[in-house]
Length: 215
Image 1: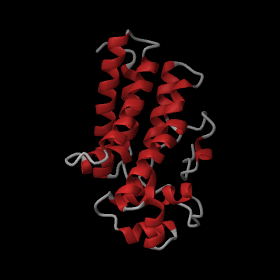
Image 2: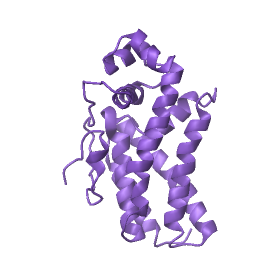
Image 3: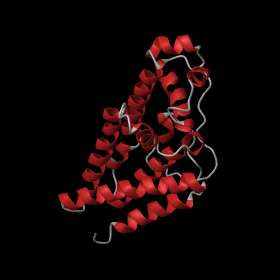
Image 4: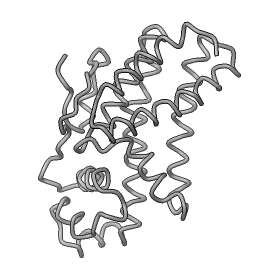
């Protein structure tokens, strides 16, 4: 099945589109940025590829097609831009990835579609990994973006508990959600380390099979 490429929400519109995984770069951003959303998409890509600290204001301005003064006019500072990007990505993720769990289908079908879509998200921007996890690891010491990043985890946790509660008692659904979060983060780290998508495929298979076994 072909890869679903690019960032726009339309790429993920049809729930029957289930991407496979690849070790090739995917998800290049458009060059023309004329709106706030386009600026956030473009700078998101830069932060996703190289992280917060290693992405210069000049890189961000170039990606946005603006001068540094123009970028600062919109967001005030690099930190202000990062906050706006995290909020934008969190909203985008909720609408285009987490929403999968509330679509029709069995628990197994919805979990697989969700995982594949999420892991495709982790492959965007030259295999950048989980954008949220990257930012948590990089800025966790200072906690400067912690409240916004916690929103991502809270939304992810709530969606998974809601899905798994259709099959398991509430406490078991919560524990399974905790284990799934840890498992997928580890799998994405291995994917980034070895550039081998087999770690993503194994996570999907393991997660679906795990629904049939006690914990």
